[in-house]
Amino acid sequence: MKKQLLIVFALVTVWGCSTIIPPFAPKKTGKLSQSAVAMEADKYFWDNFHRGNYDSIPQMLDKLTAAYLDNNEDYRLAAHIGFTHSWALAESGRMDQPSPRVTDHATLAVKYFDEAFVLHPDKEWRYYGFMVSMYMAEGGIHGNMQDMTEGYFKMKKAARKYPEFNLFTAAYTLAMSPRKKDREAAVNMLWENLDKCAGEKVDRKNLDYRKYLSRKTVEGKQSTCWNTWIAPHNMEGFLMILGDLLLKRRDYATALRVYENAKYFQEYKHWDYQKHLDARIDYATAIATQQEYTEIEVMKFDRCMVCHQDSKMKSAPDNVHLQLPSMNVADHY
Image 1 (tube, helix red, strand yellow):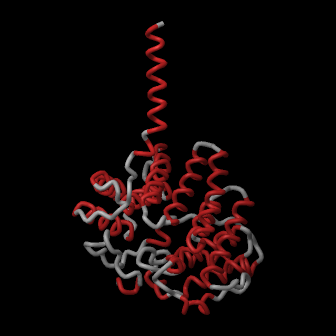
Image 2 (cartoon, helix red, strand yellow):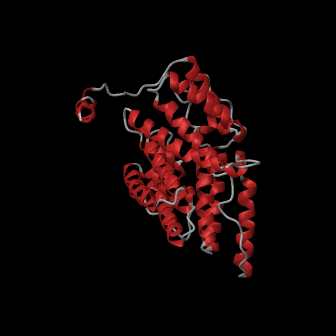
Image 3 (cartoon, one colour):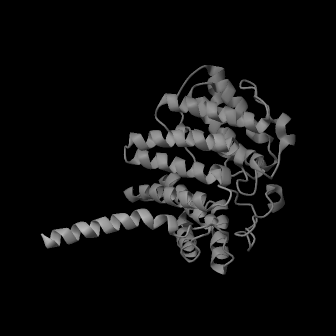
């Protein structure tokens, strides 16, 4: 009996401490590290990410994680670990022998994006959007509809906070769904994303993005509407994804016009995925003129690299971790 009373006393004590101690525990705050290991890890991340070196992911994770463990208040390191895990999962089809354990990247991406969002002094809503997309992916992997539904509503919150970026993140997540309803929602989100970037409702049937090119900026939230050093082919990739979804719904004429818009950006001549776009244009043209339908695989390309890869870009500067280089991608060829 005495032993039982001691156990009860211990449990009550632990419970009491757990309700008293946390409010007094020091709060972890975020800051960028100036250490050499952080600088080297981030430069390695950007150089290999921009070049599409998927095989370098294990080394990227080793360097970034080692730097983070020494500087665990650094939100940028945490975010880049999250990005690398996301890339590993999104393009896992590139592996010669994919392992079922590749799905673990979703869980780790959620963890590090959440950490980056909490640590960021200004609450970077792009990190939140990526975190939620990986949370939804994790829910899908485990067949957990409750998590997927919760993630969907969190994603709507992310889109309200930063529509220029997170409308695309939400759309891209839904675009991979086998359900037609989800893919239709993705199309609507991508059109709305273009509206936010253009400053008006764009013409859905006759898109001509040349009239909006003067709006380009490399600062603030609107910078995510354009090609920048971070995503040197952001718009070409965006428009190919939208075109693919239109093609999948058999709206060939609109898909063709959307595809053609990808060529209006000056960085297009450096884009590694021109041949993918050309193949789609040839296919959509043939279908539109012959009125015949045969299945084509759409949304089948290196998912992250279609916007981020540019093998012709100069290497990242040594101090890239502390201050990103000029966001004007034209400055880096």
